[in-house]
Length: 62
Image 1 (cartoon, rainbow, N blue to C red):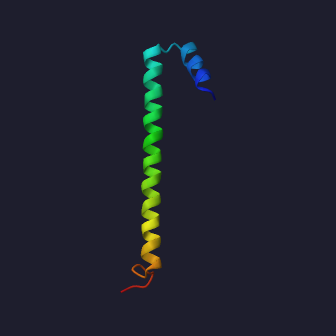
Image 2 (tube, helix red, strand yellow):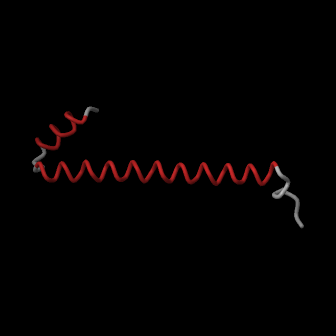
Image 3 (tube, rainbow, N blue to C red):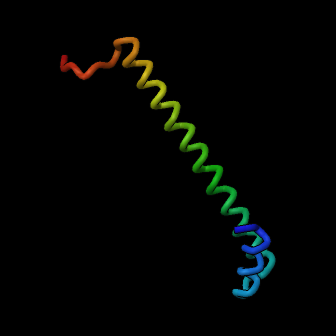
Protein backbone atom coordinates (compact mmCIF):
# COMPACT_ATOMS: atom_id res chain seq x y z
CA UNK A 1 0.00 0.00 0.00
CA UNK A 2 1.25 3.46 -0.87
CA UNK A 3 2.03 6.02 1.83
CA UNK A 4 -0.58 8.36 0.33
CA UNK A 5 -3.15 5.59 0.63
CA UNK A 6 -2.13 5.02 4.25
CA UNK A 7 -2.52 8.71 5.05
CA UNK A 8 -5.89 8.86 3.35
CA UNK A 9 -7.17 5.85 5.30
CA UNK A 10 -5.95 7.39 8.56
CA UNK A 11 -7.44 10.77 7.66
CA UNK A 12 -10.82 9.13 7.00
CA UNK A 13 -10.45 7.36 10.34
CA UNK A 14 -10.24 10.69 12.13
CA UNK A 15 -6.50 10.94 12.71
CA UNK A 16 -4.97 14.41 12.86
CA UNK A 17 -1.95 15.32 10.73
CA UNK A 18 0.29 15.32 13.82
CA UNK A 19 -0.90 11.83 14.75
CA UNK A 20 -0.26 10.55 11.25
CA UNK A 21 3.23 12.02 11.31
CA UNK A 22 3.96 10.33 14.64
CA UNK A 23 2.69 6.99 13.32
CA UNK A 24 5.01 7.35 10.33
CA UNK A 25 7.93 8.04 12.66
CA UNK A 26 7.08 4.99 14.77
CA UNK A 27 6.87 2.83 11.65
CA UNK A 28 10.29 4.06 10.52
CA UNK A 29 11.84 3.45 13.96
CA UNK A 30 10.36 -0.05 14.14
CA UNK A 31 11.64 -0.90 10.67
CA UNK A 32 15.12 0.39 11.49
CA UNK A 33 15.14 -1.57 14.76
CA UNK A 34 14.16 -4.75 12.89
CA UNK A 35 16.98 -4.20 10.38
CA UNK A 36 19.52 -3.69 13.16
CA UNK A 37 18.33 -6.85 14.93
CA UNK A 38 18.56 -8.82 11.69
CA UNK A 39 22.11 -7.56 11.10
CA UNK A 40 23.11 -8.51 14.67
CA UNK A 41 21.67 -12.00 14.21
CA UNK A 42 23.54 -12.36 10.93
CA UNK A 43 26.83 -11.34 12.60
CA UNK A 44 26.27 -13.88 15.39
CA UNK A 45 25.62 -16.65 12.86
CA UNK A 46 28.76 -15.69 10.94
CA UNK A 47 30.74 -15.86 14.18
CA UNK A 48 29.36 -19.31 14.98
CA UNK A 49 30.21 -20.47 11.44
CA UNK A 50 33.75 -19.19 11.96
CA UNK A 51 33.99 -21.01 15.30
CA UNK A 52 32.88 -24.25 13.65
CA UNK A 53 35.11 -23.85 10.60
CA UNK A 54 38.18 -23.20 12.76
CA UNK A 55 37.41 -26.14 15.05
CA UNK A 56 36.83 -24.01 18.11
CA UNK A 57 33.23 -25.19 18.35
CA UNK A 58 32.12 -28.76 17.76
CA UNK A 59 29.24 -30.97 18.72
CA UNK A 60 31.60 -33.15 20.76
CA UNK A 61 31.30 -33.05 24.55
CA UNK A 62 34.46 -32.25 26.47
